[in-house]
Amino acid sequence: MSSPQVDRLIQNLSQTIVGKADAIRFVLVALLSGGHALLEDVPGVGKTLLAKSLARSVSGKFGRIQCTPDLLPTDITGTNIWNPRTGEFEFLPGPVFTNVLLADEINRATPRTQSALLEVMEEQQVTVDGVSRPVERPFFVIATQNPIEYQGTFPLPEAQMDRFTLSLSLGYPTEAEELQMLQRHQQGMKPEELEPCISLEEVLELRSRCAAVKLEASLQQYILNLVRSTREDEDITLGVSPRGAVALQRAAQALAFLEGRNYALPDDIKFLAPAVMCHRMIPAGGRKASAIIDRLLKTIPIP
Image (cartoon, rainbow, N blue to C red; front, top):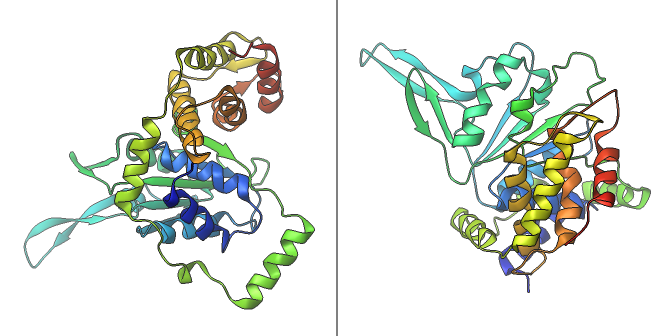
């Protein structure tokens, strides 16, 4: 039986997001597993709307960074400014001091600025001038990026990609969904009008309940077999890291919890593997990561 808080959250998000049930499920998996989500898609398919609606639904603070080539690291983390009245430096917090952070078009920022997110995504803290400051809890990043063939983009480094629990694409809506979207816009439903349906404390409680979902030793071995096979495959230059194995385990637990189970199944891992593993790999010779993962899922025996 699924949690009533999760049901309320999905229902709330469905008021503004039309026909993206899988995308909502993936984003909630990332949130409840304690990770972050990367949305790679063309402009105008609802990435920002999804992030804003989620922040409203969990009664959390919403922060936004519009990434551009001239964005500086201190524009993200915050900086110390001189206060002539007190004669001291004061810390001015950046947009990362929030609960849900949208890093819009993250691959338009320079690598130096992208790296400013590394510490806060992994350690939930920001260090400026030698002083570390914790960010809000829960802290969840939804980053969007344009397809790499667009001009004026800087590919995310491997270390940054590895910090996202999963990567997904919303895709264009179907004709019926797009018609429903136009009708909703005519009615004037906006994310600002969404009522919070779950508190931040409940999100933290749901995270701990997800972590308690049972995962058999045979499933952990299946995750290891999948991950280790990417490091030995001749079609892959860089395989999935140990952090990727941990992310896949946590995501499988969160998905099982969303489905109303207190135990994970092999199907959870198979469903999540492309979203969790593809962005962590560098395929050789221009091959597609998704095709390689599909092949591995078919060849590695299921427990």
